[in-house]
Length: 567
Image 1 (cartoon, one colour):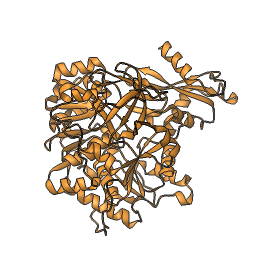
Image 2 (cartoon, one colour):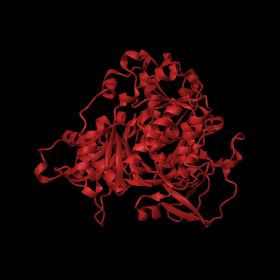
Image 3 (cartoon, one colour):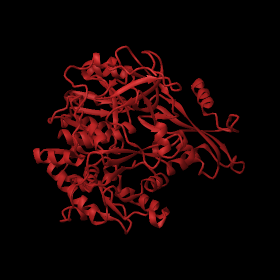
Image 4 (cartoon, one colour):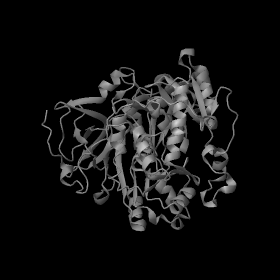
């Protein structure tokens, strides 16, 4: 085994303004809100369609919800699910769960009943806090659970609970008509639900905050090759490690962010729920991407920092109004999940003097392990290892460290690494290797490092599709498709997509009785009802059979190679 060098290549070109590692506070994440609320009580923490929420109000609301959680029996270490789009209530509930010494379980609001049911069961969630339009899905999931698995309580909020009335809104803040109707909808709620407005303002008895740095703070779910989502266990300390990295992006207390990437996803959560509170910055929240509204909000609120995915930038450039948006206040734009096309990155530089700073990270690493420093960025590049991170490229079979330019698996260790997969010791053991007595996480991504220690993504060792920054694990989609009564076999592969990068394609073998009776569109329509939108196959192709290996396994790689060659 090679000796691990004490000086890695990137350290020779590391920005002089930054330390190589950060001292991470040995406190809970809740304490960050206490500090910011004490320092800046009247400062706007979040702005939602023109309605501000100050740091002191954020703290007060979180304490009220925490008191209610404890009143319904939530104890230290219990899991509470958050099933919401981006909104101030998401942040309030997140910190309320932490204040109650419990564990946050963010759930993708695009998840359908089957996906939600599995996650509630696996996390053994006690309570769900959800949006009104998702309450029926929670009720449906609840009905399928065994009596001992059922939720103690469901707390429901309407997005309009945090919005001003339409009559009081500035026209520049208005969402598209359909979006506004969705946000202000008043769907009928199941009888057992409790309304958000009934909780706030009540004098709940609040017990002491006892959570410490190494206690479990969050189960962030990521899917895998088995088809079943896995809960990544993150402590207050591992999440804090990336919550304190605002100096990388040159963030100050005067910075304003655009919170449009999903808060349930690790990137949006770390940037706009954790780091924004630690740095006491202001965040303009968008629950869904709307290029016209985003452009107006960036201009009106002088947004300085925008974390996004490349497709958002591409879409913004596609607006006939983009030159009138007034993007001159932006000083920092970054993102990951998918590579930024070089032509778009160059256009950003030429028209706005902005360099798109690509980064790299995973759910298991609480977002970034790599990033491009603003003063020394490289295009089409993952960047250099982050604060306190040791990354290298190894042969995936022998684990021998490779030389610069050689392609191998990226492995990393650092303070933001998760503790393991919830209730899954086998998967945890498989995710780590040991090099020179140090524990490294296997990313499953193939890449190479240049002479200066910058990393570049080459391919994937694991079978995964990246569609507009959303990770789609084929085995999970296949498992859902097998529930369709007409499907005998299915194999999911990726198809080239000029806008999304990749999209989901399903190769399906129909049951004999369904042949001639089932169409490709029917499979797509069924998928929309049973899985999150980004997992739904955009193409379905019926085939007579799927090629199999001698051991009977579907040869998905062969099918993928055929698709790629055909494209």
